Image 1 (cartoon, rainbow, N blue to C red):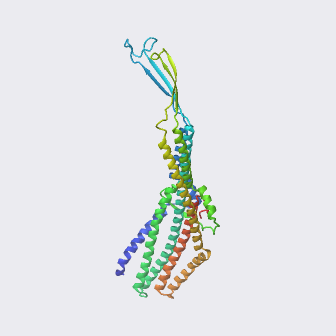
Image 2: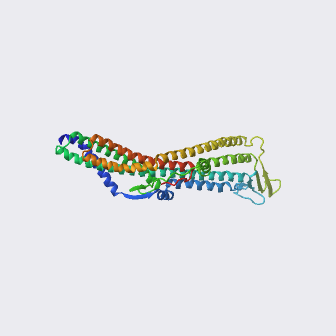
Image 3: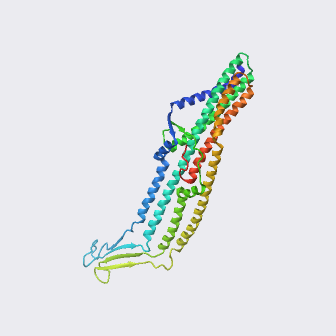
Length: 425
C-alpha cells in the first residue's frame, strides 16, 4: 500500500477539487432554458443591442437637423461716443446706428437633398443594428448548442467515472486479498485518472461558455444556465436559389451595403447642388451715414461661381459611388456563396446523423453494460475491457459531436440567410 501512495496523491487531490466544484455548483442558482426562452431574454436585456439602438436614434435626430433652415443673421454698428463725448447718443442730429437683418436662402433643393442623405444614413444605421442583432443571435445559438453539448459530455464522463470508480474499488479489494495484480489495479486507476482529467477540461470549457451566455443574456453571475436542446428536426427540403433571394432581403449586412450605395448616389446629387450659388436676402437701416438720413435698403447677395463650383467634391462623390457599386456586387456574390455552402453543410451533417446511426448508438449503452458485467465475471481480460471502455467513450462523444455539428450547421444556415430557416432545436 505504501508503494501506491505516490499514485494516489494526485488522484485524491483531483477528487477533492471535483468535490469542491460540485459543492459550489450546488450552491449556484440554476436557470433552465430552451433556446426560445434564451432568445427572449436576449432580446429584452442585451446591452450591446440597447447601445446600438441609440445609434439609430442619433441618426434619426440628424434627419431633423438636416431639414432646419439657416438662422437669420442680425448685425449692428453703432457709435460709442459722439462729438460731445457722450456715450451711445443716437438722437436725430448726432450718432450713427446701422442695423442689418439677412437670411441665407439655399437654392437647387439643397435642404431636401441633405435630408435625403441623412435619411439614407438612418437606414444604414438601422441595418447595422439589425446586423448586430443577427450576429449576437448567431453567437447565442452557437454558444447555447455548445453548452448543451458540454453538459451531455459531462453526463458521459460521470457515467464512466462512476463505473471506473466502482471497478477500482473492487479491484483494490481484490488486490488486498491477493486475487489480482498491482499492474491491473494501477492501469484501472490510470484509466480513472484520465477520465477525471478530461472531465475537468470539459468543465473549464463549460465555465467559459457560461460566462459568455451570462453576458449575452444579462443574468446574474451566480446563476448556472442549463441549456436545454431538443433533437434536431428531420431533413428539411431546401432550395438554394430561393434562399439566396431571401437572403438579399433578410441579410442586414447586404441591405446596409445597398443603403450605402443609395447614399453615395444621393451624395453625388447633393454635391452637384452645393455647386450652385445660394442667395442671401436682407434689409438694412442706416441712421446717418447714407446719402439720406434714416436710410432703409433691400440687400441681395450671391457668390459668383467662376472658380469654385465644388468640382473636387463632386468628382470624389462620383468615385465613391462607383466603388460602392462594386462593393455591393461583391457582397451579393459572397451572400450566394454563403447560402450555398451553408445548405451543403447542413445536408452533410444531416446525412451523417441518420436514424440508423442513432439507433446503433442507443444500443451501444446496452453493449457497454454487457461488457462491464463480462469483465466483472472475468469473461474478458482487462486489456480487452479497457479498449472497449475507450471505444465506448469515443463513440458516445462522437455522436454528441455529430449532434452539435448539425445544430451548428442550422445556426450557420440561419445566419447565412439572415432569418430563421430552421428553428433552433
